[in-house]
Amino acid sequence: MYSFLEKASAMYYAGSPIISDEEFDALAKQYNYEEVGHTVTDGIPHLYRMYSLQKVFSLEDIDFVGAEYVRTPKLDGAAVSLTYVKGHLAQALTRGDGNLGRDITLKLEELVPNIVSIMDTVQITGEVVAPNDIPNARNYASGSLNLKDMAEFRARAKDLCFVAYDIQGRGDISFRKAMKCLNHNGFNVVTDFDSSNYPTDGEVYRVDNYDAFYRMGYTAHHPRGAFALKEQKEGVITELLDVVWQVGKSGVVSPVAILRPVEVGEALVSRATLHNIEYIRSLNLEIGCNVEVIRSGEIIPRIVRRVDIQKNSS
Image (tube, rainbow, N blue to C red; front, side, top):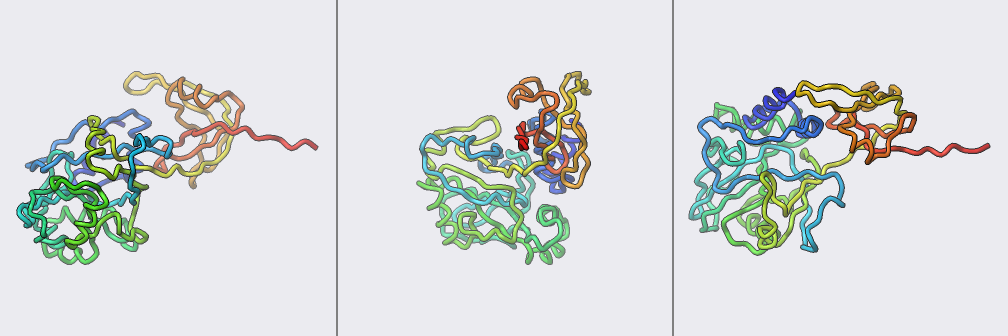
């Protein structure tokens, strides 16, 4: 599975994803896989590192210590960075590994303002998206940026849209004001973008004040001042029949739930991961109890809670 996740991650950063973000997240969580870094051939450094966002599934997991925050849709397309120098578009890069990206300046010249009134040297980050009425819209957006034929890209450009979600290097006081500045310069901005016909992958919560945002700092992979809130899908109730232990390829022994077979998302599920003994204890699971099962990323069956069903007395 690790080799598959490495391949999936590499294909994502190359602009040709083989599984969705949700599917990758589910597999990465189950197998405790952490993206460390990816080699980008002939990579060009971003002006500022493009961090990924920490994913949460409940508002209770977000704590900004009283700071005012902004909520925006998390668009699901291809992340890119734009560098402007003295008001002119100087460089556009794919996200790559967050440090290095691939040059796509000629393509982004077709999608974004080439000249702006911002005279500072800034990096504008955003998402290139395609509408939902295009099959596999996310792959269409990322695949378009990977095209070698500019004529073919220009033919697709009418279906693509760049939506800005941050700017660095200008010294803005607040995120909202920064987005207003970009909107004034001709950009679509995430705070004022109608995402109803575009693919989304949850919501983003971020601290509005830039000073507060930067004071919160960063982990090795994520800013502490912003989170991606993902939807926890409703599951199906079934019975926990047994727990068995299996040895993985890495030699780690982990528990697996044996379930009364039940259909979850058009798939018949009879087994689900339980991660470790602490996970079993945290859910207070025992043989014979009822549990709620979901398919993480529409692939991996997972128990999310114990369900105590009260029987009606007659």
